Length: 117
Ligand SMILES: [Ca+2]
Image (cartoon, rainbow, N blue to C red; front, top):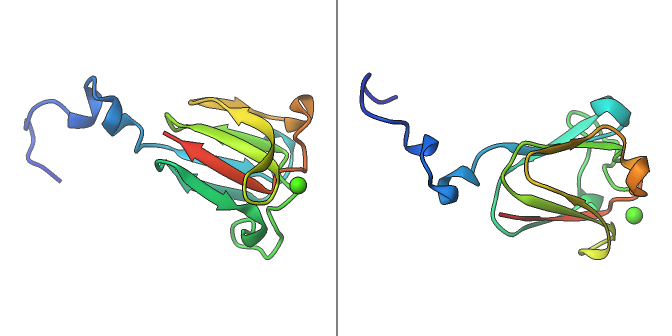
């Protein structure tokens, strides 16, 4: 940690570049952010195949299992029905939450994602 009174927080200014490195994008197994969770930190142009991922602390697959999401990053996150970013089904805007992906037709379908910062 830096010394006290070291000046303004460098992350608190107008620099959008720094801002995108903060926060997490999380998927949840059930509606209202319940059940298993799976989170990734903000990262530029990051693709993830959810067939390779499990809910934290479990062996239950994230693939075709996400029902709600929370995005505290400054990044856009796109969910795809198919593997390797095929068949776009959902766009999570920066700093957004969705307690039930059903309303967007994406419930229990996401198999891959792309984060763009
Ligand atoms: Ca799918």
